[in-house]
Figure 1: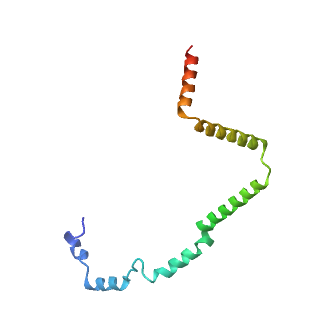
Figure 2: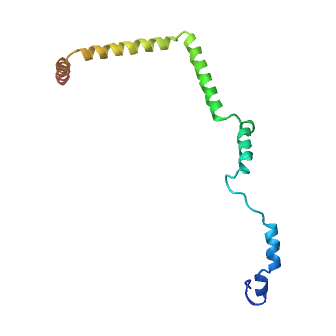
Figure 3: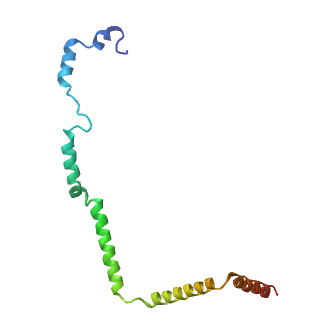
Amino acid sequence: QKPGYGQHKKEAVPSVHSRLQQCEVLQPRKLNGSSVETPSYQNLHRNWPAVGGEPELQRVLEQRRLELHKDEEMARQQPSDLETELRKSSRSCKRRLENQQKIPEFVRVKDNLRRTQMSEQ
């Protein structure tokens, strides 16, 4: 049977005595952001790096320091043969592009037309 029906009707309505007992048992709840919770939250936040590892800022600064150290180490070493060849080829490509840009456009178009006519024959 459902409470409130038949013989259970009297039990469903709380008495004055039971209401007083509930009031004594209930304690006021703390509101979010209250000054009582703030110090414990601040302490947890302050101690978090010790518990969970280093904070993000320290980790990023450490990564930057390691990258700078690595870059300095690479600068001290002599470049490999492959690196020197790549630099030479990039320089020559840049020179060719600069030379082509110095040539007037009508001359470049004329050269392109000659190439297409030669390839068709």
